[in-house]
Amino acid sequence: MVSRLHVHFSSGKDEWETPDDFFAELDATFHFDLDACASPHNAKCSRYLTKNDDALKQRWNGTVFLNPPYGRKIAAFIRKAYQESLLGSTVVCLVPSRTDTHWWHRYAMFGERFHLRGRLWFKGAKAPAPFPSAVVIFWSGRLGQAIRPDPQT
Image (cartoon, rainbow, N blue to C red; front, side, top):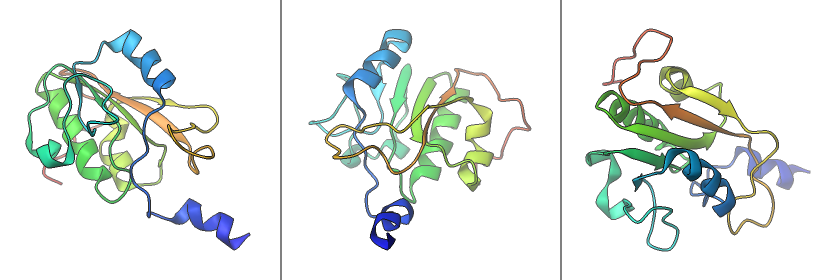
């Protein structure tokens, strides 16, 4: 029992490859220009940024798909997605539904949020994700319902 619970609280794995069919559904609606967190073997768009490109230092233009690392860096990626939307990009984020976290309340609450039913089977996984998922959409130039956060924090 303890070993099964360990995976729920572990941050040992932070990269979860988006299922092709799930991405295809989103892409049919959004027609993505850029995959902001990818590698050559899992990129969902012809234009993509890798770890070596350091997506947090790049400008994201157009309609962007983001499946960020789910570890400690996720807050920086969600903040970047929010900031890029204020500069004119629409950013669609596939993230763990962590409604109890600082990054969720500081940034995800400003996007349109859809909580996925059940657990995603990430590509190459032997079992469904050990966490619930959500899609957060930061629309181009549109502020959320709450008070705008300070982009520096």
